[in-house]
Every structure is written in C-alpha cells, then in structure tokens.
Image (cartoon, rainbow, N blue to C red; front, side, top):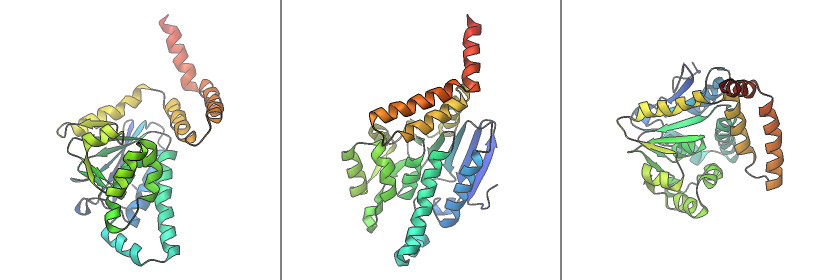
Length: 255
C-alpha cells in the first residue's frame, strides 16, 4: 500500500485500481492525497502483468477539487511556497502520461476544478450518466492554468474558452459531445462496464500500447516531418519487440 490511506491501491489480475479515499471530503485534493497518488502511479510501472489502471473516487464523487484548507493555505502562502505547490501538481499530471499503461478515469458524481483537471489528465475518461464536470475556478478568482495544457488538446479553442471562463458545470453527455471524455455508461452498470472496457487492453499488445501512448503525447508540438521521423523510430522499436514477433507467428500459424 502507499504511505497514506487517502489513496487505496490494489491489483486484480491485469488491472490496477487506484481509489481516492476521502469520501467525507468528496475526495478533495490535499498535499497528502497528491503525494500518495503519485506513489501509487509510480508503483504501477513495477507491475509487469498490469494492462491498465482504473482511477476512481470512493463514495459519491470522483473529486471535488482542492481541499478548502488547501485553498486557504494557498491564499496566504508566499510566491516560493505557491510555486512549490504548483510544481507538485504539475509532477502529478506529467506522471500520469509517463505511466506505461493506460490510466483510465472512472468518474461518478462530480469531477470539478482540480478534480476535473485530474480526470482530463488521464489517458481515457469513462463517466456515469449522472456525472458532472466543470472548471469553476474563475468564480473564486483562480485559473485552471496547468489543466489548460491538456484541455486545449482535448476540445476546440472556443469550447475550452467557454469552459474555463464561465466556470459552468456540464453533464456527462455534454462532455462526451465536446470530446472531453470517451464513453458514458448507465449508472447501475457503471462499475461493471468500466471493468469490461479496461479489460479490452488484455486483448492487445502491452508493449505496443505503451509505445503508442508515449508517441501520442510526444508528437504534440512537433512539426509534421519531425512527427513522422519519430514515428519511424517507434515503428522500428515495435518491429523488434517480442510482442510483435509473437503476433506475427500467430498470424502465420493461421494460414
């Protein structure tokens, strides 16, 4: 287990489950939870049989954003302290992309402010039909600044502008239409459908998925030519992998 009970960690077969465990606080983010979440994500890369990670919240909500005590602390902190705190959150967002297997946000209830940012940072987002999303930071004079780096890559410029400057909540169906999330499942079957979706990664090559994940994010700011050249390098790496050789053998055996 990670050092804190604010985050639960377990591996069942091919799936790792990371659960934000502050249901009485709507899984609000504080220093302890962020640190424990990073510990759990680092641990995933040591699990050789894990194909995907399901990140969820205990209780009714996924995550309501920053803890009120944390917000109060931020308002009176020095520039140096605020910089250190912001860098810790940046490290979390970066870490999600560095985990070799897909990290799937399973959102029930509310994913607001930093909680919505956390979901947006994940590789895939699955939502219950009753889930709500939003970046209400502007209502308290704050800015979802780091989250914009991910949000802007998920939705159009106009939609991103609306989401971060109005601070309104949107439904799961609206989030799906915008491209902010991947799938919407009915509430009653949500947990089962999330697991079934995550287990789809059992049917594909772990190494190929890992290489694909890295490449998708690596080419964000590349020119077309540089992206193609990087693709060449990854293509060659994939060709030399055991998974590829095994896959070719299976194809040939069918003839």
